[in-house]
Image 1 (cartoon, helix red, strand yellow):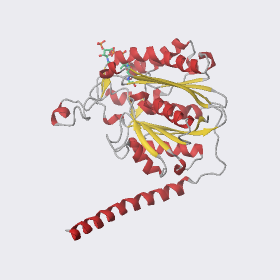
Image 2: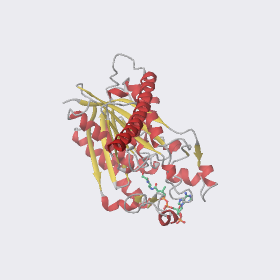
Image 3: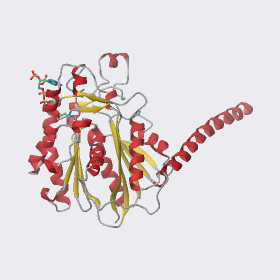
Image 4: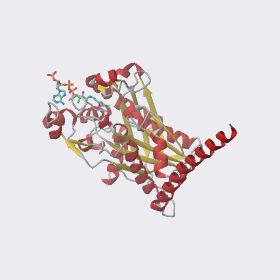
Amino acid sequence: MPYAHITGWGMAVPEQVRTNDDLSKMVETNDEWIRARTGIRERRIASEDESSATLGAGAALCALEVANLRAADLDLIIVASSSPEHIFPATASIIQDRIGAINAGAFDILAACTGFIFAVNMAAQSIRSGASKNVLVVGAETLSRFVDWTDRNTCILFGDGAGAFVLQANEERGGVLAEVMHSDGSGGDLLSLPAGGSKLPASLATVQSDLHFIKMDGKSVFRFATRVMARATKETLEKVGLEPEDIDLVIPHQANTRIIEAAARGLKLPMEKFMVNLDRYGNTSTASVPIATVEAFQNGRINPGDTVVMVGFGGGLTWGALVAEWTGPLPSERKVRHGWFLFLARIRSVLLRILRIVEGLLWGRYRRKKK
Ligand code: UT7
């Protein structure tokens, strides 16, 4: 059975920074309260021409660069997002086109902030089953578009950004070794975006009632999160016969420092074993774990041989974890020239669009002639 190695990782965040002081000019809050209750100092906000797909594609290209893999060699793309580009087409399809992954099937999954963990788990299982060899997993968000900037309970928390992993099949032991995924739909109303779907499609009434914004019962979500983070971690470790003290680094969903501290207490591990960067990005939902992973690499906190746990929770309710053994990247021998492939992919995409227009015109003429 092949192992699913994480061979590439990348991130893309908007340039625009919104600090706690900026927020204190918009709602009744202050830097001290936000830092004390959440740990967040600032977050990134997408500009008008940025979206979940553009950020996701940026992160994907960085991950392919690290893996030294051509986009054309991908056979599967899974995008997790709580703020997808549309209901359909899938954000994964848009990213597939943007990066020129011409041989990949692409689809989205929705499990709110746990989405990235679930997506990596599905990618790993697809590789282990032999169905896929090279899989791209992306977590991409522009939650700023769904935040009510007059609601101090939610607007202080979220930020925009994207992160991505490349997973590749390899016979050498390592990579994602075990995973757990859980849901409890009875808590769905604790964190939701009520309108815009088939139950409450967009209407004047839904817009006037602010139903296109994120609604959250913060306290209940907090209690749920503190219960499940340590539990999911232990459950995953048990599957491979490991104990919490065997972990070199935990990369948790970056929602609130107090939630991460509760997980550390539950696992009896020091906070030094946890990667925390939410102070600079806030809660980027599905993007938080891959963004934290990229920064863990940049800071030398993941080394060959390390055992790493990734664990998350979110709306749904959903929660899950995975344990990975890092054997170091397993790059292919020749260096991929991404710029050239990207250029060709763009030309191909434009040609396909032109072909579809020509085909439509010819088909129309044929139908008229037949009449
Ligand atoms: O990916 C999953 C996403 N969601 C989460 O992770 C959310 C989990 N929950 C949390 O992180 C916390 O519940 C919050 C950070 C959202 C809130 O912290 P809290 O300690 O649970 O505060 P609270 O809601 O109990 O509010 C305490 C007080 C209230 O005032 P009173 O009623 O005690 O007078 C709030 O009105 O703080 C007030 N408050 C604020 N004050 C200043 C609430 N938000 C703010 C604010 N600035 N932004």
